[in-house]
Every structure is written in C-alpha cells, then in structure tokens.
Amino acid sequence: MGRILAPYGVRGWLKVQPQTEAIEGLLNYSPWWLQGEHDWQAYRLVEGRVQGAGLVVHLEGIADRDQAAVLRGASIAVARSALPAADEGEFYWCDLIGLAVVNREGVALGEVAEVFATGANDVLVVRGERERLIPFAGPVVMQVDLDRARLLVDWGADY
Image (cartoon, rainbow, N blue to C red; front, top):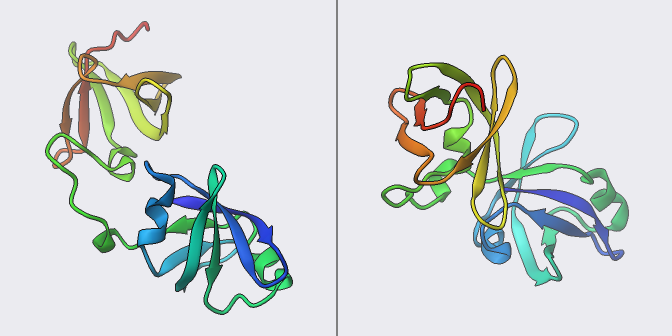
C-alpha cells in the first residue's frame, strides 16, 4: 500500500509514498503493517495528512527522528480484511500478481509479476520466457478468473 521514505522532523513523524489510488486513502487504515529488514510489525496510525505528492504520518511508538530513521524503506501493508470488497469487474493489484497469463490461442505467456499505473491504464508486467508489458485494458484483457488463477488476453505471443 506504500513505502516509508524518510523521517520528517524530529518528533518521530515519517514521510510516506502511498501506492493507493487516492493519496489520502492510506490514512483510512490502521494498524499499518511495516516490513523492514525483518518480519512484519503492526503500528497504529496516530495522525497523518497529505503533504505534496505524499503523506506525513505519526505512528504509535515512534517518538523521535532516530526511531523514525530505522523505518526508512519499509513496505506498508494493511490487513486484507480491512479493505472494501472490489466492485464487479475491478480487482486489487495484489490479486493479479501470480496469475497465469494465457492468450486466445492458448499460449502461456507467463505470470503477472507486478502491476503499475500509467496515465491511460494500468500495465501488467508478465514474466515467462521473456518479459512482456501488457495493458490492463478492456480490449486486451478478455477474462480474469481468480478461481482458476488465470488471465485470458488478446495478445500475440510474438508481441
């Protein structure tokens, strides 16, 4: 859902780069689960606000700049149960990661390794015998079958 960029000030606040559709969306969830060098650890969000293209936040138990600095680079996650159900025809990116990608001719193109946003549409990074960038758009993505862990695409094997 985001990443800790750096400490902010001297009182334990943090700069955060959200990876949510709306920048402020990450402020709606608590606790945050942070993964740094070790296991995931829960932190309660005390306070936060939008600042520029990111957020600045204060997490419970982080009282000074030194404690905040330890969290630099940590990934941010929230419990799946805290997220609202996706609408019909919408998917969380995390649900697409790992899906097998097959084209209309039945050729396996690989698996979805990551998803990223562009201005026009999201893009699937599909890794198989080579890496492909496939737009996650209506005419290209024909079917998303989460039960069978499969994506059917109108995409040539030689593209």
